Image (cartoon, rainbow over all chains, first blue to last red; front, side, top):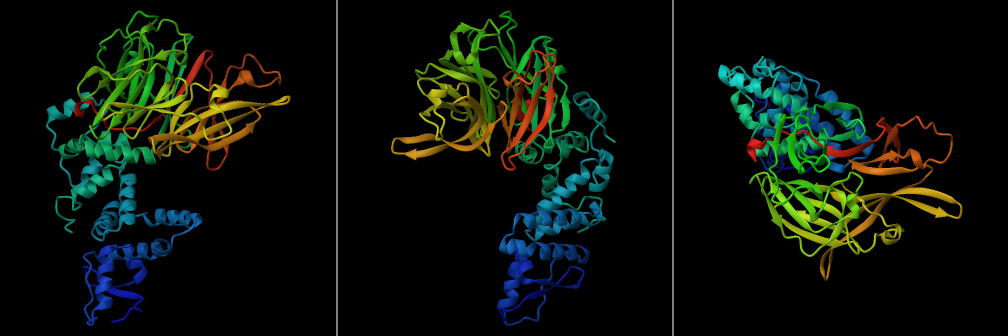
Length: 162
Length: 394
């Protein structure tokens, strides 16, 4: 048992090892619980697994490490500005490829800040898409009958099913 | 995480959270994606969350400009950069062929009053959601509807209902445009509820007071600034339908209400608190200066029960020119530059433009943002957020 642990090792769902600092892990409740388990159990050999794939976990840990100093100590307005800019750069990613995985991970790891950020990013990416692009991304089938489509068109002239 | 399966691997709960953050125009378009999404957009909890995001991330200043002479009217939405985001099509309310004005804006619904047209028609109201392109005609009230009235409009999430409240005087009829509401005493109240679809008379006590033209709604209440022996705040609690009247004997500042005879105040909301705003001349020896004051109205617990206290929050000035405050918008005060009160300087009388300015309460900076050129015109402002509120769901 050691209270001077500075980083813990976790496994991704793909079985890769990742290191995360104690202060960064505090951004997530489930990670924090794992941390306590590791710190206070005599048997430190077992490496906890996080049900997030490696590609996503890299990003999640990057986010945690960046936000940890501010979350733990508070920050000035200029730091907050800087962090906002960093968030925007950080979120420049493909919707399906990684953003959806980040959303799932943030939800699973109870990381409110990242979850909000990822939801907003997804909304910003989706807002300009066509209906058929949206269906493709979410694997949704058009289940309106032709009568129902006609009724919707009457209600909202110019609405498109494509 | 089976992203290869033919279902989206995102749980619906996460999808909902994303959709709530979309701009309203995208949501309206995405009704056509599938039935589940279309139904989701009519659920009150989704609509309420969307309004919260809309008000925080995408608030608009609605400007109603109208020109008495040519009877022209326009509704313009300005975004946070003070750019015109949209000019609303007024076709659905113009089709009633009466002149109209807006009484209130709440959760994306506008309460529109159709004029009597010199007493030929009773006054009537419409509720309108420009986004959904839906208009609901409000039925005629119990009494003759040609009276002077001060109308308030608001929403309560407790009862999920929108209500219109009219303070009026049963004998005074509105005939002339030049009669001013705030010189007239009102002593009755009646209320329309969207969910019941009908009007009813309300208990208004023995009050016989003067009221401001504008009412404002916040947190399930509608507020008026009233004036009897003392100035007062009249509060109507939308869920319980009860009025409370609270006197404001003095304002906590150098300005004495009685001395300045300020009426009507502009009543508004600043950071979820009720606020009052007005401008004053002060005359020292030979010089005359002008300042704008803003007070915040807060509840104060005292031995005799709750009372309201007005605390001076901001003083802007002294200013070299007269800029009358019109509306509080987010952290800013919208002011109009009054031509007639500018001293000398050989003003071109043909220049009939009025200039609108914005004062930022945080940075203390002035910004000129819009001018309008109506010869006999007026500008009225509302806080507005786009919403999915539909009359089918209330």
